[in-house]
Image 1 (tube, rainbow, N blue to C red):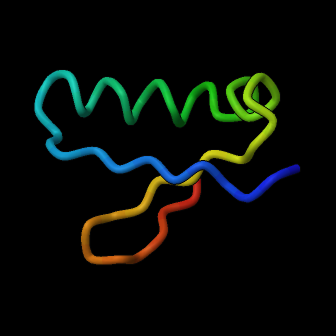
Image 2 (image 1 turned 90 degrees about the vertical axis):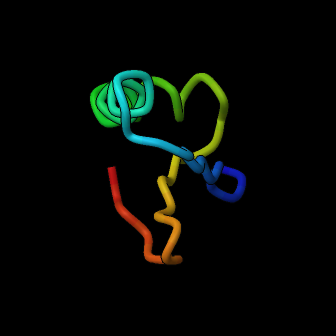
Image 3 (image 1 turned 180 degrees about the vertical axis):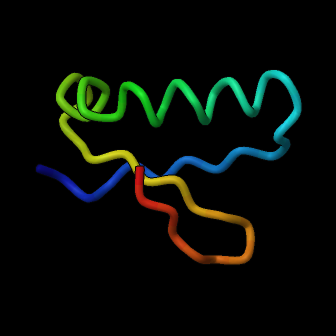
Length: 50
């Protein structure tokens, strides 16, 4: 698999929180579809595993 796809989310309101939930629930299927692991990086630079 290629390098991980890093996703940054600017806000955690209704849309941002829903996006995080969807990414957590479907990270394996999304990774298979795009051929890359999905990684969520916090603004402070720390990595949050799905």
